[in-house]
Length: 123
Image (tube, rainbow, N blue to C red; front, side, top):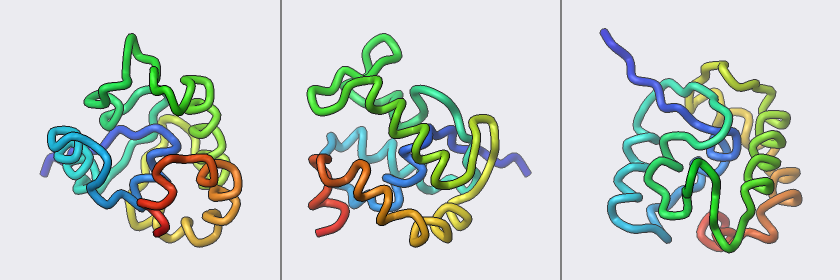
């Protein structure tokens, strides 16, 4: 049986655990759910399957007014450090979700306090 892997960058491994289907266009929400529904994950550097449909992706760089591309890359590096992964490795959502409780407070302190989606993720 052919298994389709989601290709995801570091910070999406953490942030997608809190995705509630809010804050994006319907097309983008469908794309995120299609990624979340894949069991296997391949860790990549740079833009991934989620970024591919993001309106802020311009020339393979994040052009969001909230985050710079350098900030996103830093988030990716920190997410991989906290989770203990490297680009090119494969994992699954269960493994990620088991690690979240151990790292979420540090992640929140590093990135969530200044994120516009904080209320969406944590109420």
